[in-house]
Image (cartoon, rainbow, N blue to C red; front, top):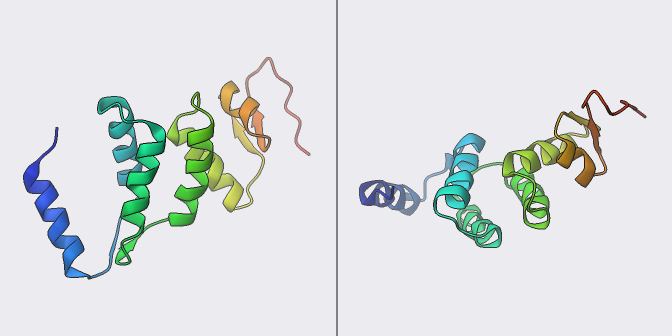
Length: 123
């Protein structure tokens, strides 16, 4: 549910020009709500988050989210959390990312499935 008081408070915070940090979990929750509750398309969600990123006083993991957005828009069968985990692994060079998620392992070349029926091969 939209809360006008919250929107006004955030706008006032942004208008101060003072730096502040937005944690990843808050952005992930916002993305989830926009997609699943508000039924907003993935490209529009990415554009909205990019507007947030354009505010110079906002501190957040821009590079990580931008990387995750690439897969999030391209692969509709992957959740944002899947894409975020994959981007985290890729950026931190902790690959392959081991996962029980067959869709994730199948879609992204640097993932390895841990599903018991699939062999685990680490290079």
